[in-house]
Image: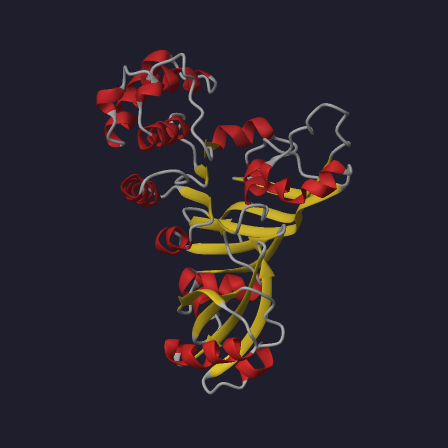
Length: 344
């Protein structure tokens, strides 16, 4: 693809940690490896990415969708030069993250998962100080800071200390900081985590505006609705591997047919699934044990009409139902069908 803003080929990342010393905590490693606490304690290797191939077009709003520990943050870390890949390549706007990291950083803006402004500086000073890293003069930086703060709706907070800002305002400051040197590509790592619903919607509006300006935006998220509403294309990743990539509409069309019905049980559902598959309208059923809870997931083209029959089967097998969840064909049901587990 000749107009690719970002290209990764066979990108792999393996974290290796030594066993912690007696009386001391384990050394910190990237968040994507957190799912393997037992391996870390044993000093084992943790594979965060396994041969990831991606091509993201210039001007595209691209989403990396997956649960915590899927490899999203590691991917962003490599593409923004904060994490060195174990093998493979990542090319950002023509620059190799291994060979030309300084050039890569000049061409990208990064909005971190959690705001990390300098608390000793006010809002405007944070932007001017950051601009200095890119050789931007104070006068130019002040002019850009004023324009960005106005565009992002926090101009009146320019002289405020960052600790006086709300969570949503701090995230807007992070976006302004990422844009101060006018980068071609913007990376956002789960930018709406911890925001209230209104702040999240406000941030969506800002991101759509940035996209309309022709910028390439890459965003990680585990919010299905966010990915569906904002992104031109999505890559679904889990356990460091690419599972699917396409437009949200095309991905939803791949979701298993019918409504997914999940029955949360007080015991194993292994003995129920054969009978449940025989219920008229049920296309498939499988027992799951996830997050310490037993359940049976059933797909049905009759929606909730089959629930009564499923409950009867569970009762006959002396299983109590603790909860029932229904989900129409969606990105979430596609994800569950690909991975066998929930997104969160």
